[in-house]
Each structure stands twice: as structure tokens, then as C-alpha cells.
Amino acid sequence: MDTVRATLDNSSECWIDYIRRCIGINDISVHKKHGYSLYTWDEIVKHDKWNDCWIVVHGKVYDVTDWVPNHPGGKLILDGAGGDCTAVWESYHPLSLCEKGVPVKFLIGEVRDYKDFYSWDGEFFKTVKTRVEAAIPRHKCRDDPQMISKGFIIMISYFLCLSMYIYFCTWWSAIIYGLCCGQVGVNIMHDGNHMAYTSSKNLSWASGHVLEMVGSSSVVYRRSHVFGHHSCVNHYELDRSFDTTYPLMRLHVNQPRHWYHRYQQIYTWFLYMNLNFGDLFGTFDEFFWMSNYPNRRGSTSFSAFVMQILVKLCWFFYAILIPSYIHGYVSIFPVWFLYMLTFSIGYSLFFAVNHWTLDAGFVDNSSIGNTNWGILQVENSLNFALESKFWTWVSGGLNHQIEHHLFPGMVHTRLPEIRGIVQDTCKEFGIRYYQYDSFWSALVAHYKLLKALGEYDNPPVSLLTSPSN
Ligand SMILES: [Zn+2]
Image (tube, rainbow, N blue to C red; front, top):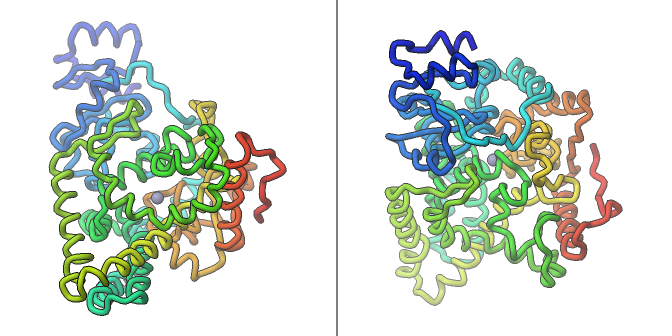
């Protein structure tokens, strides 16, 4: 409070703010441009551009336009512009900075009738963060030579596999290219879009954009995954992973059950095989899509939309047009189709088994303001095959999903280093930490969820599987 008031420029304080300060309504800061106001979400969401960027953290509204070029996390801040960035603020920044809060010089007001979805009270998240920061110094959490060499190997392989796909145009070259694309996705693109690939803003940013090489959109991915999924994992309305799956798949007890869900444990695997078709053609609607939920916003940038069209044209050129020119249209389509299937399945399954089994929770509105964010992240994420270097490599560290969700800004090759700290802290606080012994057992657990949610509105407790702890 004292710090806040020390920053006041009393000479420019208007009489309304003076009265508010005197009667102690708020931690008042007078922003020279806006004054201090209560804002509705309708007003806040309009400020979502690089030259007009507002963010919300713990119900306070900040105009960070001047800070955007200096932000250590690069342009990631723009994906949260006009929305609620509380979870991203808390999970990406050092504890000392979070305790100080967003610099008060950016404060311009607060959200009218704000409700934080999660609770930020309690000692669990603070404790685990303190221990992890002590073990992995800040400058190392995004810098790991192992990640750079891994990324280099995968990118070289990618271009080799692409060349083989174009030159040979056979079923085996399609499968190899598809698998390689999956590896680019989980190992490079995912870290890059979390701005976790390296501490170099530009390299991280570029590594996120490898998603464009397969005709998809990193802007949409960051908005739907980093903000829309990580901030509110497994909530049936807020977690945007459910947008791409329902109504075809029922993955949450709060979603209405239809007759065809009875067969979803059979047909879901075919849907996973086609994920990339949806990704390729389904990203456009995201550019026009808005929602009442502040963390569920689509992109409004026209330039990003135009870029998407160019990217898809490029992709069409080298994935279909060039091979067609060499081998003929008739022979390319089955090969292209096989490549898309392989890529889809090699990518989507790693994400599916990490949250969608009966051992994870079903988050609903009862969590609003009640449950500590860190605990919800742990209890709604699932690890698998932790001892296997092979699965850690090919899943891009997604088998350490719990650690990734607590520390999304950490490069995935460092996640095994903090596993023990997270496990011990969970044990100390009595928080369940689920892990499957193998990828196969995680897949079986996912199958059981599909079957149970297809048969029952509320699956009985007896259907819960028993992972090792
Ligand atoms: Zn992630």
C-alpha cells in the first residue's frame, strides 16, 4: 500500500481519485492517461493490440503498451492482451516478482465484479516454486544445450524426411515424414509457443512458428493452448481443448451425453488420426471467434489472418502441388492422406493421455475461487513412463505433464530435474500425483474414460483405474 501510494503523482490526481484514496476504496494509482476506473470486460477486450495493450492480473487492469517491446517473454504478452493473464503471470514469472505484483506504474483500474477462477492462497504452489527456483536458477530454466542439439537434430531430420516424401512419394516416406512432423510438434513447436525453447526471444518465437510449416497457426495455438488450456485445465467450459473434441467426443461429466457417445471408445481413435485436417481447415474460425470468457478469446489481428492464408498456400505448394507435379495427382493423394494420419496420431495421443482419464479430475464451477491453482494443475494432469528416456524424448517431455503445467515456461529437457521436488512437495501437502508406468497403461486409462463417459452420465467410482503413485 505504501509503495503504491508512494508512486502517486498527487499533483495530477483528480478529485474523484482523491476521495477514493481518502476513504480507502482501492490501492489507488493515478495513471496519467486513463485515471483509475472500474472496467467491464467489454471495454477491456478492445485493448488487445501491440499499440494498445491492456492485461488483467488478479482483477487489476494494467495498460502495458509501453512495456510490450521490453517484455522478456516477447510477444507472448500480446496473446493475453485484453484478457485475464493471472495464471500466466503467476506461472511464468519468478516468485519474488509475483509477490511484488505487476509494477504499479501500469495500473489503471480494476475489473468490475471480478472473480478469480482459482484461489492463489495456500502454501503449496509457493513452496514448490521456491524449491524449484532454488534448484534451477532462472537463467537455466530456458537454456539447455541438450534442447538446442535436440532441436537441431529434429529439424535436420524434418527437411530430410520432407525431401524423401516429395521425391519418393511412397507409403513409407509418408509415414516417416508424418512421424517426424509429430516430433517437431511435441519437441519444438510446443516449447516454442510457451516461449520456453531458449531464453532468446527471437529463437523461441521462431521455434513456435514451425507450426506454420504444417499449415497451422501458432497464434491460434498460443491462444488456445497457453492461455485457453493451461490457465484453466480440464474445466468443461473454459479449457479450450474441449472445443475441438465436443460434441463428437464426451470427455467431461458436465458435457451432455448423446447416443453415439456409447461408441466413442471405438471411433475416437479415427478422430485422432484426422486431427490435422481439422487443424488445417479449422483455424480460420478462431480468427473471428470471441467469447464472454476473458481467457477464451480468438485472434482479432487482420495481419495474422492474412498470414494464415499465405502459410496455408505455402503448405499446399510443397505438400501437394510439387509432389503432384512430379508423380501425378492420382498417386499423391493416398500418400498425402497417409502422412496426415500418421502426423495426427503421432502428435495428438501425447496430449490426450495427459488429462483425459478417469484418474484426472473433472473441473467445474465449484472450483471458482476455492481451489488453489497449483493443486488443480497437479490433480488434473497425469504423467507416464517417467523412468523411460525414450518416452521422455519422443513425447517432448509431455510425459512430465504435471511439472510442465506447474512450470510451463521451463524447457522440457529440464522437467525430469524437478520431478523429485514436485513429487516430494505433493506428498508433503497430501496432494495426489498420478503417474502411469507406461504409455500403454495411460492409453488404456484413456480408453476406459471414453467407454465410461459413453455409458454413464456420471461414471461410478468403481470404474476408476489404479495408477501407481
Ligand atoms: Zn503446454
